[in-house]
Image 1 (cartoon, helix red, strand yellow):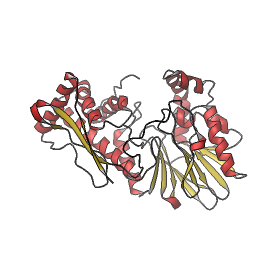
Image 2 (cartoon, helix red, strand yellow; image 1 turned 90 degrees about the horizontal axis):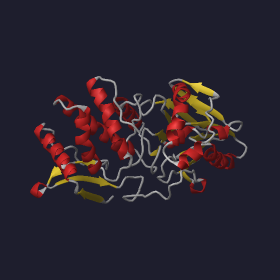
Image 3 (tube, one colour; image 1 turned 180 degrees about the vertical axis):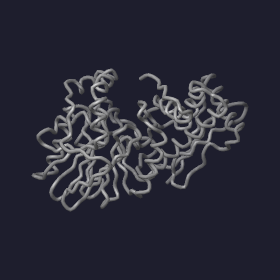
Image 4 (cartoon, helix red, strand yellow; image 1 turned 120 degrees about the vertical axis):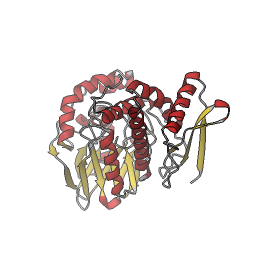
Length: 369
């Protein structure tokens, strides 16, 4: 694949000063290059000083197997599932893509000879209906199962559309987290936009028909799907693994070209790195992330490299006596410049807050939404 080099020149004096401080600190600590180009094509941060005190953040990267052809822009802004865009990503596995629209997840439909499993629902009942309509068309008369990768609204809060049509299977940790946090997340998400508010109006949170702890194998008839708890982004994150196709649905544990979201104190960067290592060990050929383009194992390794990079920087700064706010002031402009084409930049301070808490042993002090 072709390589692309991106150079970003900060224009605001404060940003330039902070970036220079960040680079100087790296050199002073003997940390060397922030990262180097990896063989598997992940983004490789390498902030450096250029001529006349001007600071640039340079990131070399390959287009990954997901082929977002450098940059894929959203095709719209309305948070609706578009089932007309569905495509078969592997034999008997269909994905309704998110089209990089906020609050729209990648939705999966996995076929067996006897049953069909739907993965994630979309935001609210109307979006759930769209996913269900396509699942029924694909399934014919086969039994329907539904599962969700975690409890967040765009992944789970359309489940009411499936009541009476599909058996809802969840890991116990997710079911508990949904009960505890679901109502508050409805109110939180409704503040994000009038469109989100409209789609969550009248949302009914649905209890699962079947739960498990640890791991469960679902036999769809001639095809087994493994469901496994992988807490990191939330307490109840769930992997959906199709072994015969070497394919995984990760939920928001992995997203293509997005910064990781660590929204509350139940998120853990340490666990996240470990989970990504476990997923990489499965040697998946196809990775369906929670958001962003379908790709390969490189989605996982790129995100792991980023979190490890951030962990090392935060730990180094803590060791020199920097507090959370000072670390945030240093790292946010540097990291967002190094990854200029990654979305969710507003969640970098949340990531730093979790990393700072794990480095110091203190309770997380998270910024507000």
